[in-house]
Image 1 (tube, rainbow, N blue to C red):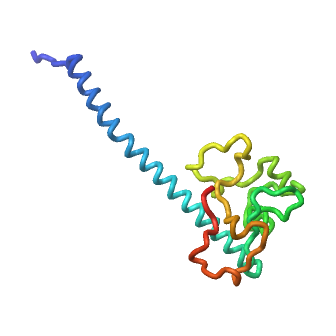
Image 2 (image 1 turned 135 degrees about the vertical axis):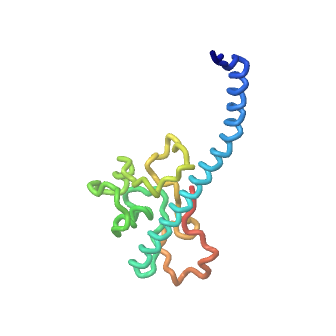
Image 3 (image 1 turned 180 degrees about the horizontal axis):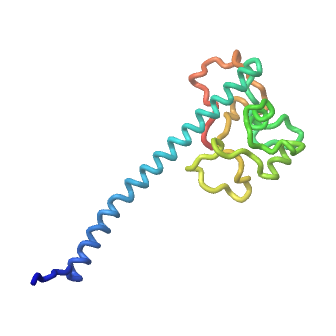
Length: 161
């Protein structure tokens, strides 16, 4: 006859405690990995937006879209809307009469326009708007041409807002 040996309650609790300690050591590194992946996605989004803007510039005789932030209905439209009208952006409901109507309806595109690190939008800010902004100091309310830019390497075009 063989005797079966069982774990005692103390041994079981010690094993559970060791597993809990190991898990607590592992969780911060997993969180850092997740944050690094989200940061990488944000950088990729900005690169894609930069490429869209470059396509817009190439199609519009070297002219950049104007960096109006959130305009009134009588404005020329912000840079997202200008690129939509040029056929470079899909996902905005084109049945609206103006950009302001589309903004009120919350039809701004998602995907590359949202950074996973961005978090929730404030109550006074439409949550469907982009997390990225075009350089308003250089491009606000004016159409800048390639030939007007002296040093491209010193100019920020799109940034995380």
